[in-house]
Length: 369
Ligand SMILES: C[S@@+](CC[C@H](N)C(=O)[O-])C[C@H]1O[C@@H](n2cnc3c(N)ncnc32)[C@H](O)[C@@H]1O
Image 1 (cartoon, rainbow, N blue to C red):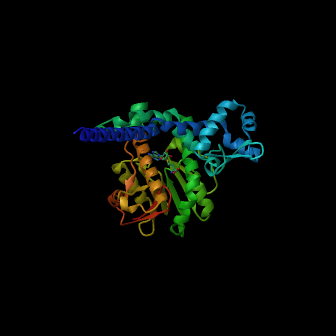
Image 2: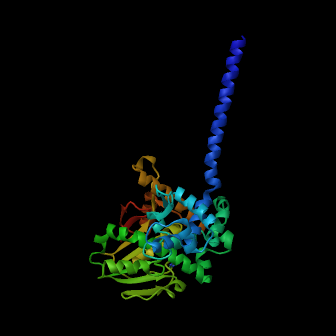
Image 3: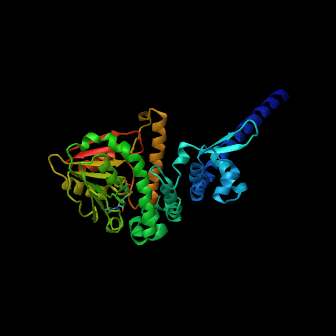
């Protein structure tokens, strides 16, 4: 009898211990969410300090004391930031076997954290980590509740576009952030739809921001004349450039006429109703026989079995997170599945629509009138 009881007690103890292991594992995983903001803050700190520039200017791997004197900052605090960023693989650390001196160098990611240059993503990090863009995240659950107030409006009392219109410094940061993202993704997009631009004389970039997208497009396809179309306060401060005409107005009211309309990272800012209006105006702006509307936006894959490789899985995770950004920062915006894209495109009166994945966050969606 006693032996049976002993056995039962032992099993119970083991079960309890297993449960405790599970709880501990879950708690460790939960810390990932508790500390989710730390990486973001450390990357922002690296950009503000100019760590990547200092390393690049140095021209060869740099020691902590060289880095701290070049940045005029405390070696001990800098060491702690670098220790984390090296651990997260943002910077590389090498130790000489002779005297064990540590040298830091850039990685492909930290090269993008320079404040200037064609491949800088610094403005995007600075925008998304700005207090203005972080505040709405505290109101996300409010937006999810039925009839909840949009998060940006709950935080700032107005929509992002209304806020931008009143705050030129924030608009500049916003446009710089969009432009740095566009500079990186645009070559892949243009390569992916080069044949679409053959025979196209004019392109209107709808919601084109400061015009950097249309400028890049004209460089790639010099036969094109470009129209950069955005809200009046945005185009007023957009730099002049040969072959580009800036037009101010609202794409919810009209779209300037052209052979093709290009709409990148814009439609996800809007719900279906506004999206259909914008697309209908784009359709009416291009010739019925050979016009086209080229959209560049994410396409969410719903089915698990559609994901066949690691990169696609990573891209899916990013697209789902950007969908949350739309929820936090726009009033009605959302990322769409292919079915949802086909719905808005058909409702806007197009007869044909082709989706071209480009192994990046967005896909190219071409609609024909
Ligand atoms: C997310 S940004 C995309 C900018 C650019 N297409 C890119 O990919 O970098 C959205 C753009 O839409 C513009 N926008 C917002 N409301 C608009 C409206 N009613 N009419 C025209 N442009 C508008 C914003 O000013 C902003 O430049």
